Length: 302
Figure 1 (tube, helix red, strand yellow):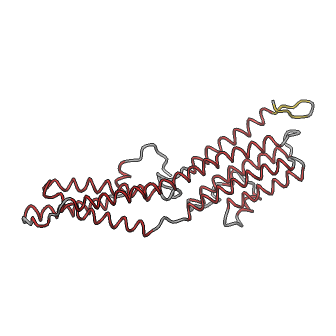
Figure 2 (cartoon, rainbow, N blue to C red):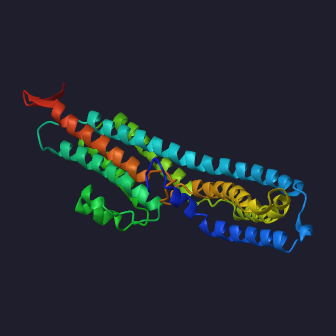
């Protein structure tokens, strides 16, 4: 994703460059016929494209709202992933107690938190159709990497490793039964969020609805030069191009927003969110180690 506050103008216009060139040529041809050959009968009442434009505007507005709802739902889901990732890390750090430096509990903490960081990156890459295991070797052990390579659904495999570690923690006495239940609820929320993202990703916006709106808009643009030629003359070309640009950009905006996981400038910034989660979780782990001091062969949280 191109995470920029200001999207380049060239990128925006590049999406409709071909359509604008064709519309400009079409308008110029209409103007030449009207002005040079004096074929005045080609003009039509402006009320015709006005009515069509009004109807199409309503349809485009409805489609844009539906597309924005999909984008906002995706962003809302990833906001929940941020919260649950922090919650899981807090639970791992606060429910367990390190007895001495370098013991199994400390390794258990680091393994769980680093795996959660990997899960966020893996989920974002999977939703974008990329290799879900790319770059995860920085956070996972060799055994964990070998485990997830046997799975088509890598984020699901990582959650399974989380669940197995919860059972290990319970069996070893690092966490009690109530703590295990609470941490499992956090994993369930992460799994629910993953499923919601997949639902948005795999639910295709109705093709026929998009096609009908597009064809109606092209028909409106085709009628437009005949309606304004008698009012603007040769200047109908920039008028038609300007109006067509507005409708085309709104349509393109809706198309981009309806797919929030396609690695486009308008999609949900999953990589940036995952990077922020990594920063937060790493700091939590580091600060917890600093706060724990040794006194009488035990560690206490200051």
